Image 1 (tube, rainbow, N blue to C red):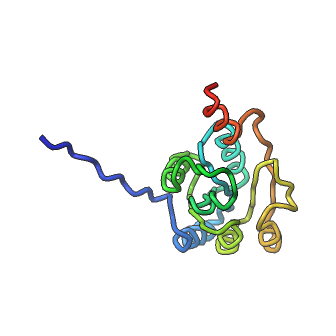
Image 2 (cartoon, rainbow, N blue to C red; image 1 turned 90 degrees about the vertical axis):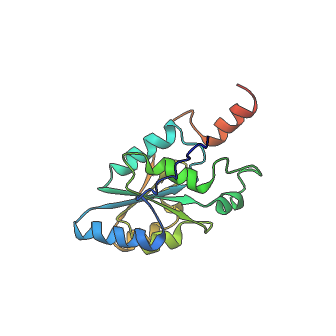
Length: 168
């Protein structure tokens, strides 16, 4: 007896850069306000979800840039990071109701992706001052806004990884 293994369905909300740019242009024709944020999102937790919901509330469509596996490694988060591969991280994010599109980027920063998408709103976590947020100048140059959103106390992937490693 053989077991049938289902082929994973492609998620229509996980887009490459060109497809995301086209989709953003379609949304913009409908006068939708485009919000962009980015991160590693290695282990999705409550802090991420609340942050993404708050970002989504700043406009009509939320596009999330996800660091590729290679990009995460270059950020120096640890030799064993990311714990979840880029496709898995993108799939989990795309499943969230507040997320309209997910784009994996391989650069060290999302500047090229932000430049391609030209979002109306740029959001990052509260550990970033607005003037430090990569792409802020691009968004502001077209009249957009930049937001540093509050962090949820007690929730961080690094702290969660340490907690798991220490068996607590």
